[in-house]
Image 1 (cartoon, rainbow, N blue to C red):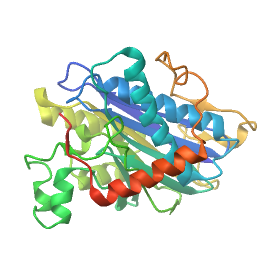
Image 2 (cartoon, rainbow, N blue to C red):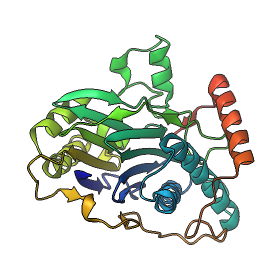
Image 3 (cartoon, one colour):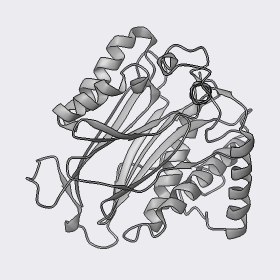
Length: 313
């Protein structure tokens, strides 16, 4: 694999940065992660950190040197992160469970797979065109889909910050998984929190990432978002990856993984929390088939019934 990757986060006008981002890669697989702790609940940054560490740990355990069942990995790792957040609340005696949104992208064999819960977004871009974008699990998106609100109301509707899906809620999360996306040289995958997309429209994001390297575009976009929002700026976080072919001219910022040995792993997702439950910093066992099948069935039922609306801020 050959790609370039860049990430940055700014606190904005908030007292705490509850966003988290990071990536890990082996010779044959790349994982991109971004989580946005929900400020309307206690310690959203803890939920975001647990989600990052749990999913990152599972990738490190299972990517030998790639993930055999990518869609199942994304779904199961989200469930595992959800359980770890609840376990942390119990072991720490917290009065309520912290919550977070999450978006993840797994790239291997020139193919991208992604999944999300909440309103942290993924954009797939090619030659300045937006090929795909995740749909927010929010009240306003539901109203737009039902024809009860106009798309132009996304940034101003009073229900724009109400989410019906996240990690850490009482209900199991609804993990929305993408179709398989075949990547071409020059394609850009952008993961970002609502602090970015809530201020800058899609066309601004695509234009900037078409006309600049990701190393230049991401800081400029984040600075623009925080400047426009001013003292009311949310945390603003973005993680971008540009896919490159083996025949393209080498960018000085490119990462070439064919120099890695089987079993080698590079990651920016480092353990920072200690869990009395003993699984955040160690091995996480998500493959209890009975529990997984039961969880999946419960989730599919909840998709049909829809979950309660959760205020994000």
